[in-house]
Image 1: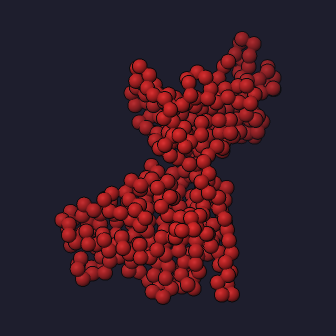
Image 2: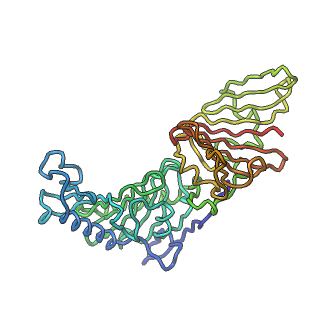
Image 3: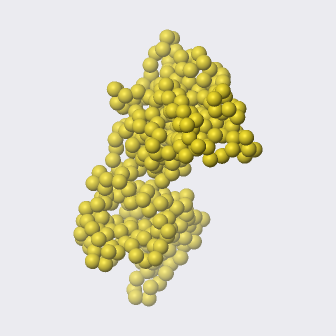
Length: 393
């Protein structure tokens, strides 16, 4: 799969005293992981902002007593105290909801994942890990305190980026939690400000982070609003998690499928395979042999297509994985050339104007001389159809 690779993961062992300590070295030697001071600074600034703002809730009301403590909510977000006092209580946590409030390294509401990765060092720029999580860095030790960055996700859909720091002297573990939706920050939380973090808990967390760092096999597909940084749809994209389109064979899907031989009554035959979450159509002979894949449709949210697109993705998330911005709208203002010349591969096009429907089409040449199109159809900006098919010459 074609993608922009910003960095690659390195794992180094450092000796601290007589102990071997696992660590991720920052890609930028002049930068450093998020610190306790940066996290506390954000919390302190939020507390002062809320103290000077008009509250939009009643802290004495029952619904203001939440898991994090007593909520004091303002236009900037919320602070959570251990008592119903902004002046004398202890601060437990904060929630930032206003883009005017800057977090560490100037991360803010609406900052993109790329912005965060540029601002906070990581030695795992591709976010290699499992489908559900990835370790960005881990430095230090349980005995001396450690810092870490991690990602929680559902496939390509990043849910949060978490940065934590432990301190054994104060038995603390403070966390900056960046909540992500649609590849951008929607809120920032600071947690653990008034909680004890024991050595046993530190050992357990450290071990789980080390294990996370050993996971591999799943990476983030690079997204960017600057389409000039992205590659055109190409033959490499046809080798995707759901199917290796150029080399697919009808017998590879096993026996737990519906396998139908179709006579087109014009001397040609199709072989259609209906499986768990997909439909594959092959051209073939009258015996179902000499089959060549000519169409593959993804019907399940569990399968990922080229550049790991998945049913349910948002239009902007998909759009920002492919090259764009080189063309313009046609006279009807319903068709936008993303790159290339429509009709001459390679090219990309976006179609608008059919009610709530939008369509993205990307076409590439193959080494075998064919042209293959990726069709992505959206309803109300949500991806509802993913189909790869070979164009007729």
